Amino acid sequence: MTTEARTRLDPVSVSALTLVLPGLGHLAMGRTAKGLLFLVLITGTFFAGWLIGDRQVVFFGAGRWHLFVQLGTGVTAFVTALGRESPDPGILVSYRPEIGTLYTMVAGLLNVLVVMDAVVTNLRLRRTRP
View 1 (cartoon, rainbow, N blue to C red):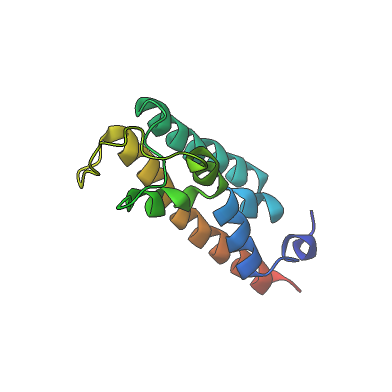
View 2: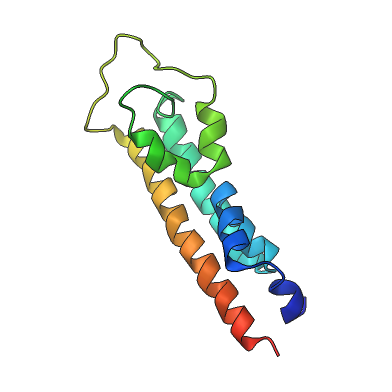
């Protein structure tokens, strides 16, 4: 893939793609290995936490600040939280999340770093463009 084909997207578009799905911005720039690595590792970390938490750690609910961090993984967190309420209506939202929630939150935070890397990579490619 030529440098021009890799830089068709501006940094904002690349960051938006990466926010939708980890690694998607890298894939759009032609950085296939990096994009697939990020996609597999971040999405895998998210789903590992989701499964460790018995598929009940990602949901919309009052006082559920964890979801804002989990949404860093984009469509993955949104789809798993869609249509879900608190797993137990009588449950109080804890300020000390359990390990499955932490895994999903770490995946969201890691994707923020991947967004930054996608933007920096895009800017470097733009500088080297003739």
